[in-house]
Amino acid sequence: MSVLLLALAAGAVTGLALGALGGGGSVLAVPALIYLLGFPPAAATTASLVVVTVTSATALAAHAREGTVRWRSGAVFAAAGIGPAAVGGLLSRHLPAALLTGAFAVLAAVAAVRMLRPAAAPVTGPGPVRASRVAGAGAGLGAVTGLLGVGGGFLAVPSLVNVVGLRMRAAVGTSLLVITINSLTALAARAGSAADVDWSAVGPFAGAAVLGAWDGKRLAARLSAGTLQRLFACALLVVAAFMVADAVS
Image 1 (tube, rainbow, N blue to C red):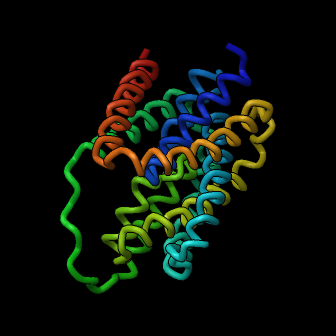
Image 2: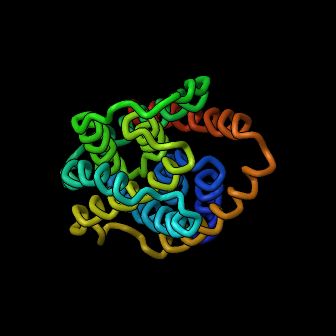
Image 3: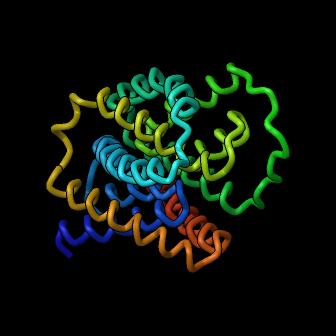
């Protein structure tokens, strides 16, 4: 199969997962870029940030039209992650490929476990928001985005609900603002390594991801969220196991 067809297929699956689940789909982008398109790990994480930024920004515009983005809360949360995202983006250029692959495998496994666990009981009332907790959560998400090239929606949404006190729909919309800002920051830090990326493959990948996200929204309306999450979590566990085996071999 040609590189173009592989990029379109992988991008469509990544976007489908993003649109159906509202987060976590970008975890598929890096392994697809490495194992299907032959990208080195560092270049794959940079390319993944491009895909995440384009897809998140497109979805953010749709959520903004629906009024589900809390701009002030999202800006404060994202501001805490700008520095760590930049530092992570710079560090990723100097880390061994095996370490990046292993760390990404752990992240994929954590995402899968979170999706397989029963959902936590909703918060009954908005408690006091501690600035230190918001800063810590935002900084952690920024660091993950910068180092590993993922949006971190599966981390951002729970943090915005439990730490910032947003309702779920607002948390999903606001997380897209946070992800877009962090991804752009990490991309800026990696500007010097952009020459290593095969843009002829990344362009179709990102375009297919944007289109796939719309199909994912329609799929989410037909299948239960629990079924979608379990299927995706099982796929992530397989990906994580494969990447761990590759990193230690």
